[in-house]
Length: 213
Image (cartoon, rainbow, N blue to C red; front, side, top):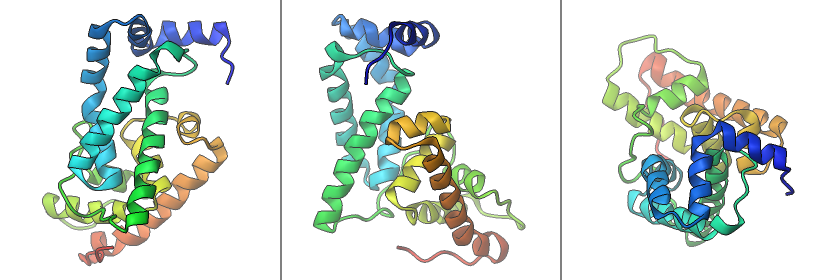
């Protein structure tokens, strides 16, 4: 994709992380370390919720940042830095999930999932589903139930929900990350909300837990 000079200048002016990445382009090790400090926990958490294994998520995060560093000389700011970073992360996650599926090792409910940017996981599903509990709920139990619910989403729905609800990416930004059109992203999130509602509603109303997938 060709990026115009005006677009590059706009994102450079608007996004401090773009300015840091441009310093990385000039082999500034300190700038790269600062970007890693800003995004490493977020990337590891995102990968954990996608692949279900913390150890694998940490390895994938290392791969993602290695790709960022290797691409530094080709980097041109055509979007926010986070959008560019999560595009790389989406590609790495997609490859990893395909490999897991081929080996039949996917188990999205095992292992501990780190919190994303300090927000409990239940915020994802409750916000995405539009549901509010009608009874008092135990928070630890709720988080476990919601983790099961989010795990039932397919890979693309889960990625879209996490990017939208935790990283606050717009439909256009998610479309760029996932290489989809904005309308497709809107449809993807709508289906995800419907699926989460179907899974969560019996639990929120009657305490009926979803079965593990």
